[in-house]
View 1 (tube, rainbow, N blue to C red):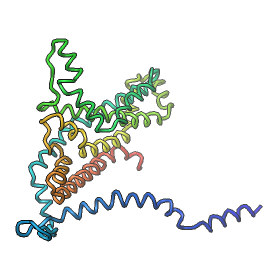
View 2 (tube, rainbow, N blue to C red; view 1 turned 30 degrees about the horizontal axis):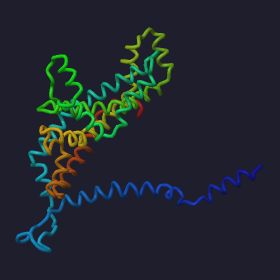
View 3 (cartoon, rainbow, N blue to C red; view 1 turned 180 degrees about the horizontal axis):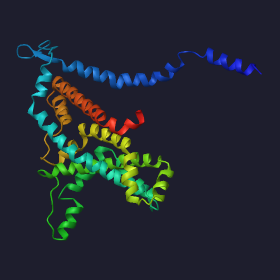
Length: 312
């Protein structure tokens, strides 16, 4: 009777202690190579600059030296970086409530009883998220072009004025539309999955008390979704601060988007068009710090209200 227990203790005691680290090694190596080292190299470059001797010609005329905080002072005082940051702030104020509001609405509708074509609706709403950002931007770009847009063709046939979505301030709404189109599906799936995890007895009790579907949605479902809403808000906030693909792709179709329309586009221009990788590195570090502060600041602001009950 004691033999199996003795064998079990022997196997547990003789297991190699380094086995977990062997399984973790690939993830640790990839994390170091593709995240820690690039971040460390960017921080290193942000404290360097090029010193040009003489006419800057010949070997040794351009040397890399320590710059201290000069690159950061230049980045923080750059009006182009400030202007692009304010533009992205406005972009986020429009995008995040609209995208999460639609995702919440679709999740609640799909979770409602007696919904028809729910599986097809979920796939149709989620499908745009599976389209790469560059392809989605090119697709919408051609739909925006007045010369080839089917929308403008229909409006012209109906005798209505044809808007140019790629001119002036309209291009701002055009880019917001692309982000909403691509982001609603992912957030909807997250919220819908959270709703499906709620025990059905809660809804049945509310129905027995005479609550309508709308009251159940407003007083039970949405409060229970607060942790998921906070998570999707943080993801959306990070994605908003890193917006790059959509305006860069649309820029080839219009003159209304400058090369510094967003902070990341300015970093891209400084690094690869002006060959100033040191200033670009300092700007990217500033953007990363702002993203970190805003994300954790938002979590700290709302965590007590959303998760306070779970922590007690």
